[in-house]
Length: 372
Ligand SMILES: Nc1ncnc2c1ncn2[C@@H]1O[C@H](COP(=O)(O)OP(=O)(O)O)[C@@H](O)[C@H]1O
Ligand SMILES: [Mg+2]
Image 1 (tube, rainbow, N blue to C red):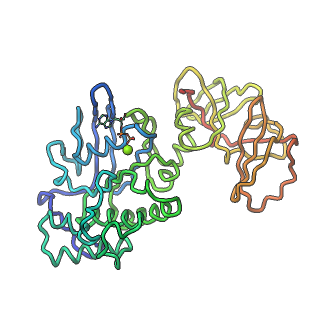
Image 2: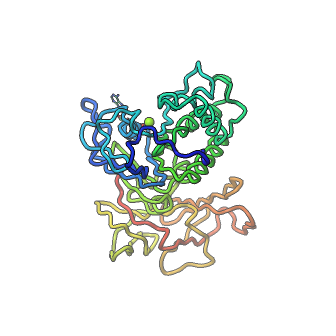
């Protein structure tokens, strides 16, 4: 597909397709349930944006509205900068891999991939050529004759991806495409999807409830809860600087140190951590009733000795070797803190019960609002 001229079968001639997707004030209610609430979201050309949230947070409903399978209660969706609210799904030129959009079981892999081209009235020889190219791109060159049930789960997902790519869509919508695969295969597919996305430069709106998947694939993560966006940003930012304890916990293990705010200036704050002393931490400016500092376990480190700020003394409660990393539990200031360090090269002289000193960097400690 890299070598073939793009065939924009559905795009009106003369209008540029930059692959952008924009949601403006999008809402969807089902009776009393508000599935999606006043969503504003943009996927820029070539960007990989992931909706990350627990089950029921409105991810699929959002995707269905972008694809055109669900009506909006209010708001507007734009694709390539143009409103598409009156366009049926087939005219939106989006490549789709949804659970609800399975392969046709009675068709071979090749026929499945050719299907979108058949709908677009592409000639049989051209259709065949492009289906082969798409199958080749997902590594299924030799399996085109098989029916879906003769393929593994991972191979079926590759066929679905080839079917989504074969007509040169403006953008890709992928809703939990790897949900049914085991961990190793998932990771392999994640890398393949990223490679394909980069080489095509195509915009992707991706859905997952798996924070590792979101972290490893996205240019930007949009964290959703109860039909709303709680926070969005590059993966490292959202991970290291969550706005509240719900986001902090949803994205992985974290230490939450309850605190009171002594002073705020710009993006830094001085906090009183009670028995853990004072800290100087990052501040996103979130306001609430109760505050804490969030520090990821890998952002805590053992120190040779204490410091006036951003450090604490405590007792080593346990050390567990997890293979690649060691997880330590340190009791300090009346609570247990998790500290994670790489196993490689560690010859620790610390033993359970020892007094230890731990510390953190200002940039990796985030002031946040206790929300839950
Ligand atoms: N067709 C429907 N009828 C009624 N409620 C629905 C329908 N589709 C989704 N919902 C509700 O909308 C909310 C969001 O669902 P969904 O978008 O599927 O979330 P997610 O994909 O994040 O798990 C849930 O509370 C769900 O029960
Ligand atoms: Mg869903």
